[in-house]
Length: 249
Image 1 (cartoon, one colour):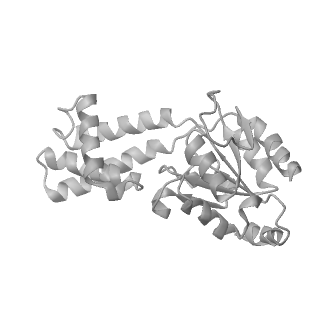
Image 2 (tube, helix red, strand yellow; image 1 turned 90 degrees about the vertical axis):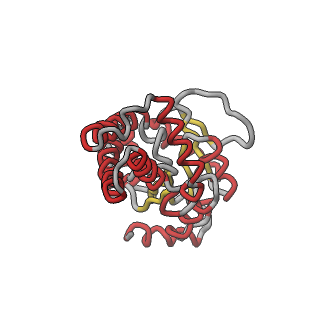
Image 3 (cartoon, helix red, strand yellow; image 1 turned 180 degrees about the vertical axis):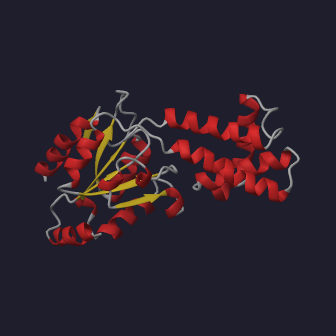
């Protein structure tokens, strides 16, 4: 917070790049490995503590059950943790467990999931790059997922974090980007948003006037629409991309 207050004076010039915001999943780390382990931990908890709740479901049947929960609870669309907890609760109810057992079981199974969810392995050079950037810029996290940057090895470099759950809506909706503006006191043109999703990250940030860097680790062709200010394939290239945007101003 002290850093934010100190750098907020930069807003008077309306020119200086002062804030770098990051998407998390598939931007700072590969989300698939921890998610696979988290799903396994959740299933093992259910098999051990709530036998019968998940045993009869194969992969396709379980996916269909999850989909039915999503459809019946549209209000939870931007609250992935609450949606998962609701799914776990309904699984146990369907398995014949009481309301109390299902509520407590949903909470504990989700906790087992969340422990593994946060055992992320940051991309190579991510910590070094974040350390360098944090010496010059305010760093913030903007995520649609339920990863908490403060439960990762990168925690010390981030001064603020917003999620779809905390805001109540997901990127590319402007609310999360506006929260970053309000938090830092900066203008959109003083912020560079870094992310892997062309729609959620690049277009969402561009729509509010932020600069953008697309992390294209898969080297995919740009789909359509306005392109990002810079494209990178790994985080080692990020400082140079930021310098390019700042110099162009």
